[in-house]
Length: 308
Image (tube, rainbow, N blue to C red; front, side, top):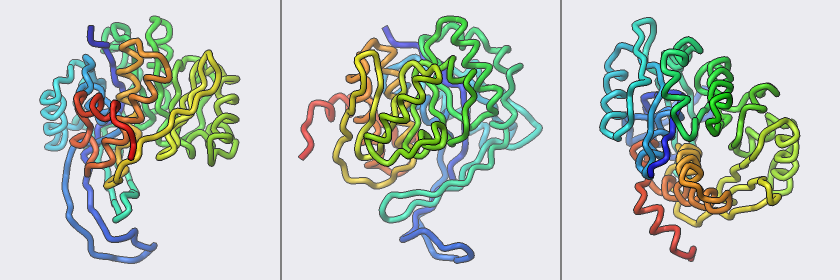
């Protein structure tokens, strides 16, 4: 039985340019190649989950523009249920401006557009999508009040809530109390907890703090070092996978989409995190965000391989 995952979040059209290095403030440099493609944390995670075998519904607000039309078409092509797609003529579809250097590191500026107009009233209009899911997957590229409202609605309905707290910002105790799985990276965990998170030891301290705030299962991603999870059995560090990095954009989205799928399938925490680590590792070997999300067969094949 495929797990039912409702992703409530953003869509951004990614405008990406590759450069030899990052420009300094006020500097103009020549770059290329350049491409335009589907992105946004919410849509990226929805695509990741759908490609990995889940039954995915997307709740998102798009503009009545060309990019919005392309977004809707992309979601349909990925087999994602679009009952929760809302269109508005008040503003544009979200856009992300992305610069990627030769080491695969990136800088991103987002013009939120319609994403910033997704409201609790919109969520009420599609509440059956939320309450009928096995897992609700959230990020922070939509208004915080909408994130909190959705988490509370899902929690009250007995639906598992997975929150990827990105882009980083402080989170209220009330929101954290409605979250089952929280998946910050190192910088996000540091901002939320106020504790230094530069290694596994720091991640353990941040995870303890998050647990004290009511989060049932913190999962802190550590880039190439893997992830640190805190479950009923205590802390577990699940190592990352060794790959040749091409573009780190979207790695966290691959991780979160995959984690939601694995948990929805009933995998234990260690196996779920290992599955998510593998999906993220495969994603960074390709350029792009949503188009680079790996398929189920590739993840399962890579899971059985040993790092060289």
